[in-house]
Length: 303
Image (tube, rainbow, N blue to C red; front, side):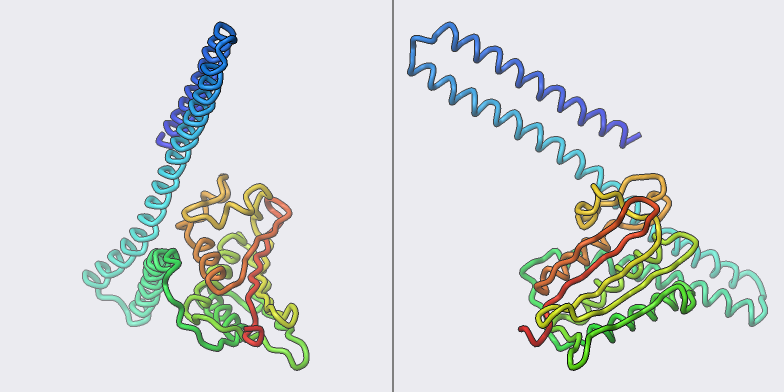
């Protein structure tokens, strides 16, 4: 209902702005025709007309952007609320069961494992929100160190394999740095690990029932090193490829809505990569045809 009301509000402001622009044009043109001999007034009218039209366009644009931004904020709050409430409810249910029933040791250990998994999910959501706030601060200083990007990526891959209970075929890793070359970068290890982990987690989540994710680390040339994460999942419409890195933004569609998320993962990736002097971009041939995310970072030797 909120989305429909906002769309109606957007349509209303666009219509109102268009009507005001047309009215301003009619009044100004009529005024010019009636007073064409008075050059000074004509020039003043043209300037006033331009300012009026500019103000109307800027006002309408601002209102539409604010409505869309509020809609994204509401979606983010709903998503975070769900991501926080679901594991808390699950943990509480298992704790109440352990408190009221005398269970066998094997059954208790099973409950403990589930609660630990829910705790990890809860902690991951909190870390995402906190990290989004930190990475959004451009003046925040990094704590650089020499990092083996290949080894870090492999560790992130193994962590995702354990978290999602995947086999070797589901997550594949390859490293091609060439003879005498390395995939070392200079940067903040925690932030770069978070960026790579977010890409791998997204690839797994958006793969659907069959997970086939390929992660590669390569030395592109003497100055750059690359991390590429590819999947065969739901894919991304081409017109959405540049928008997905915005804060709180999630690709619209029924398939995307079924997959829970906060809309912060790719924003964190872009913020971290740009602060390290690199860039990140996405590629996809369309919905249902998978997607590929590529991170390019300066090699430590180049710095």
